Image 1 (cartoon, rainbow, N blue to C red):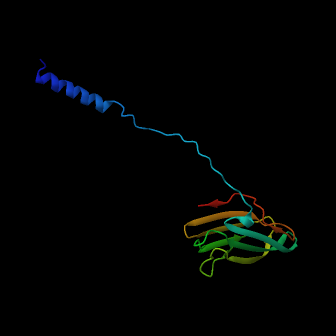
Image 2 (cartoon, rainbow, N blue to C red):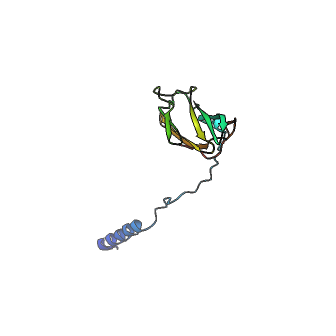
Image 3 (cartoon, one colour):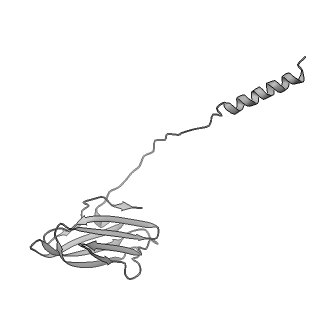
Length: 150
């Protein structure tokens, strides 16, 4: 016959083994998932961009920058800071730029090759990009560097 002391000892041993042994839980998971990314030119991006230069001479030109809000409905851009050569302009100065709307500004006597920097934000989105000023009487809308959208 098994006495009570042996039953308690066996129960304690089983309990301690249960505490120190693996419980078959996952510690890590590896999953293969496909991701598709479509890269589009500046004119078709969420923040559409067109740069056109006129009156090019002696390494400078007048630069016309046009931005278009091409985000989904309800995504208003409340700030679109556009800067070239130390001059900054908010292209959403009317309060906001709603989806489908455009805004433009002409920068005079900009050095060819300078950078156009645009930082836009609003309605839970943020877009930053930097493009060069095209030289010559031309319109340049192709992607040169990466955009960051958060």
